[in-house]
Image (cartoon, one colour):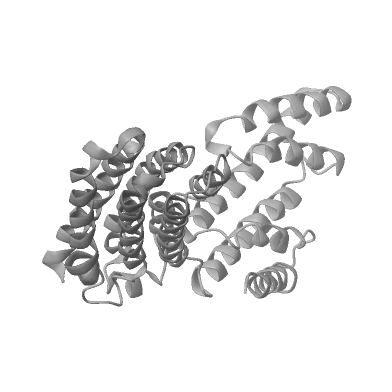
Length: 342
């Protein structure tokens, strides 16, 4: 879709600049319009103002240099001053174009030609306006859908990690860095809360905002996003505990290890429930609250009761249970926070 929008913006901008305005530099309009496509509506509006400001600053620097200095000195001065002006925060990240614009105007010999300069500014302004309009009106980009999909992806990923940990505990096999690799992959993925912030920003000035507003917008996903980010930290402690447990081979603790594995599997089932879209399900976490978490708390109590007889496994299992209890508390908090709006 971005390719089609870019083509539309370029064609409309060129047609207006060349056929309607009659600009001798009509290529600048479609060139500028393309920079407005593919970013958020708010960002494209800001970029449009910045592009016009950059050109105005560039031609002003060039004109001042021509008036005050001979040609060679004017060329050097315009680049130096344009670079310095471009470093102003208001022009970031397009500040380098102040010096480039000044340089091009001088090389074309049009710094003192008011007509050419005005056409240059008008072409950039026209292209920016067309680009903003096309970007805002033709399927404007929104990133809240990506954040929603990331909620599902992260809940499934964290649940799968717990199931892998449960399998290690149950099978009694030794692991070293394998589980940390899976954990690190989850940490490297974009944070769900950060993705929601990006999605919220993409709806500013967006005509698609009303559709999201009807289901609650980004606010409806904020609790589950926070829960996923918090539980991931606790899962790191679970990984460390399971690694320590895997380095010990105590056949007498097979029953206790089986209970720990069942606990991890049950919490994994609870995390899976976070993948239900609260915008589409009236009670997305009902099964987690009524089935998985009560069972997880029961299994946690069972494991705690047997810790005194756990021998060398006691320290590692205790660390696992403490971390899992933190996950359970976070999920309970999410369920109770959601309950009043169900």
